[in-house]
Image 1 (cartoon, rainbow, N blue to C red):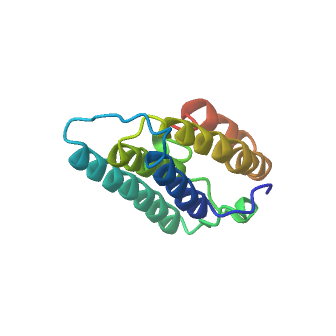
Image 2: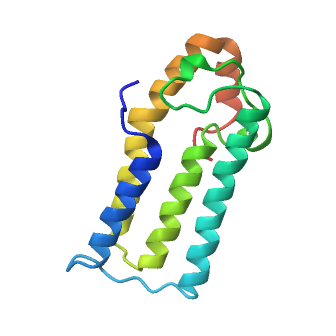
Amino acid sequence: MRLKIPPPVLLVTSGAVMWFIARSAFAFPLAVPYSSAVAVVLGATGVLIGLLAVRQFRLAETTVNPFRPEKSSALVRTGIFGKSRNPMYVGLLVILIGWAVWLGSLSNILVLILFWVVITELQIKPEEAALRTLFGQDYEKYCRQVARWV
């Protein structure tokens, strides 16, 4: 794996950068109606998505370690994994979107895009390569049926 920073650390780091941007001269304020409620709902949704994904991995008795996809003992395709191949990362992104709404800064869209690119390039693509090697045609078929993100 190329990425050596755990995805939750990237989440916290991105959130901190967003906070600093929101308090800077580059904030470009964004007013969202009922922003606090929207932010809480998005944050809770992101957490729920992540928990559902971890539960599916536990039920399948396979690893949730993002640095060791080659240790996967099962290809999980049901439940939330029938909607996204990477629901844990979707959950993290939804949490960050909620945080962006809470902070009310349009500039934070740049951080969201950067988070999406970094996770895709340095985490998801190496995981996909490992899973292709491990599960072959079953994984290829799954990739054709279910989107990488949503």
